[in-house]
Image 1 (cartoon, rainbow, N blue to C red):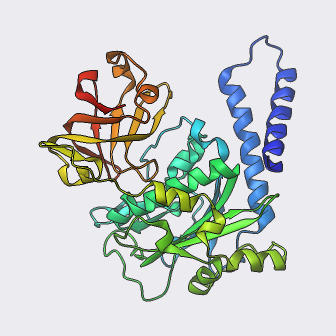
Image 2 (image 1 turned 120 degrees about the vertical axis):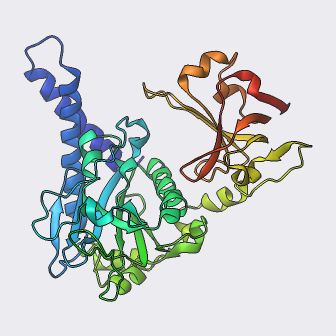
Image 3 (image 1 turned 45 degrees about the vertical axis):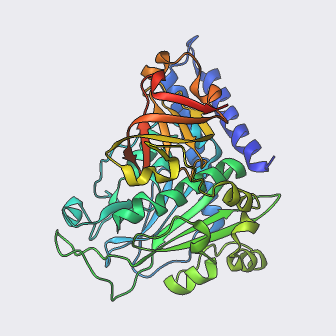
Length: 396
C-alpha cells in the first residue's frame, strides 16, 4: 500500500475528529461533514502540486490556481499552456455530475476567451483536465468549465480516442492510488484561429497529456501526444516521452524533482513498463466477430447499425452496477471490457425490477443477444434494456 493513501486517510480522519469535537450538537449536518472532508482533500492536492513544481515559469503566462487544478493561461492564444490536476483513487465514488456551465475564468485578467469565441465554430470546447476527474467535488467539477481549462478540440477526437485516454488514466489512478496529470496544447505563432467572437482563439494541431506517479514504492511517468483530429483509439500508438513534449512546447516540467529522477522519468516512453498489465489487456480486448445466424450481428459490428433496430450478440466480459442515487445504471459490456468497450447493454435503475435476477451478476461470462435500437453514447454503441425479454442467453 502506498504511503500517500495512509497520509490522505490520516488528514481526513484528523479533520473530521477535530470538527466532531467542536460540534456542540449531537448530530453533525451531513453537508458540513462533506465540506470539511473536501477542504482537507483540496489542501492536500494543492500541497502536492506545489511540491513537485509543475513547470518552470512561462513568459506572459497567467497562472491561476483553483480548488483542484492549476492553469497556465496564454493570453495571446486564449487557451492554456497547460493544466495540471490530481486524480484521486476514489474517483469512482464521486457523485457530482457535469454542468456544461462554460464560462470565463474570473481570475483571468486579460484576454479570457468566452462562449462567443466557440459558438458554431465546428470545434468542441475540449477540457484539458477532464470534468469527470472531479466527480468528488461539485465546486471542483464546476470550475473545470472555466475557459482557462478549455481548448478548441476536434469533435471526433474528443468523443473517441481522447475520451478513451481519459478513461484509461482514471483506471490507472484507481490502481495507483492517485496520479498527477498535466494536459495542454502545443502552441506556436503559426496556428490557425477561430475567426469569430471577441478574440481569435488559436486552434492547436497537437494536444499532450503527461501522467506522473510520484510516490514510493515506485516512481513512473508516461506521456501521450495526439493530433487534433480523429485518430485510432490505440493508446500505444500515441505514447511519447516527457522529454519530447518539452522540446515541442519549450516548457520545463517538474523542475523541483531531483535531477536524476527527473531525467529518468522524462525519458520514459514505454507503456508496458508504466502498466505491465496493459499487454494482457490488449490481448483480452481484441475484437471478437462471430456468426450468430440470420438477423443477428456481433458486438463489434454494432457501430455500423447506429439508429437501427437489430439484435446484437456477444459474450459478457465486464459488468458494473452504479448505485449513485440517481439513474443507478447497470453496464453490461460485450466482447471487450471497459474502457475499450465496443458495445454496452444499458439498464437503468428504474427498470431493474423488470429482471428476475441481478444483471451484473447473473449475466457475467454468458453469451447473450439483445434486441433493440442501437444508440450512440460517448462514441460507443449501446442498447437500452428495460425488460428481461429483450435478452436471450445463447450460451451459459
